[in-house]
Amino acid sequence: MVLSGLIPILATPFTDRGELDLPSLRRLTEWQLASGADGVAVFGMASEGFALTGQDRARILAEVRDVVGDAVPVVAGVGSTSTATAVEQALAAADGGADALMVLPPYLVKPAGAQLVDFYGEVAERAGIDVMVQDAPGATGVAMPDSLIVELSKLGGVTSVKVEAPPTAPKVGAVVGGVAEDFAVFGGQNALFCLEEYERGAVGTMPACEFTDLLAPVLADWAAGRRADALAGFTRLLPLIRFGMQPGIAWAVHKEVLVRRGLIASAAVRSPARPLDPGSLSFLDDVVRGLW
Image (tube, rainbow, N blue to C red):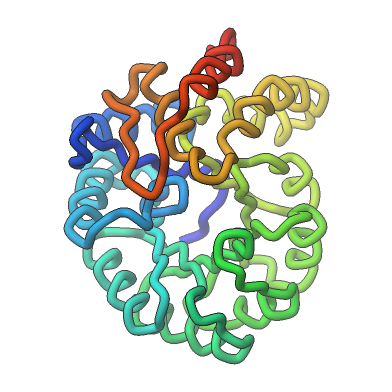
């Protein structure tokens, strides 16, 4: 499988009591397909993957897989802190129908470069489905130099990378220049620098999921060479993209927007994520006014 294009990270809807809200998840997933998503991802940072139990993960993946069918690929995040537990999550995702894995490096104990090669090699070999390396030092504290990502790209089963180490565009360009042509390079960071990343050779982006219908036409304009239209459309989105990148409350921002759009029933988040305070809620109204 070759991943490419716009692959939003699905939020995980909860009820006001903090339980999984599968009807909202189903509605949200259907909307992604209708909005032009080229795939969907679960258990990422924007999914509150850190707050999901094993049972939660199984139920979420089953629901999303049922909605998507064979229409687009489903990418499942793996965010464990050791090789053994990452393999456990990877096997569960593969058994549950994921098409590919987006794998964070172990981050509680910071691994050396050689350990990362062993880690990704073992996860890919054991899982038996494609592995995306998630280069996210802001979240993990684990730095991956360009040369290391190039080395990881040569491992069997490691077929893509999501570059989230700022400045992302130069790193995307450096990685693209060093990997094989069929190795996919994605951007992340809520698509904040997606156009620059595409200019440097990225083949896709993986933002949060509340503005898929607004970002898809921007990317279509860019691909068609309508750069001025793409930049104008992207500029309209920037306040929302920026607002959804705030540590601690990003998850609540995503969900408050999804509630406003009628896609999920509640903006509830699980601790240690925090709900928005009244001032942030008020300003969010200004940010989204006129966007849809």
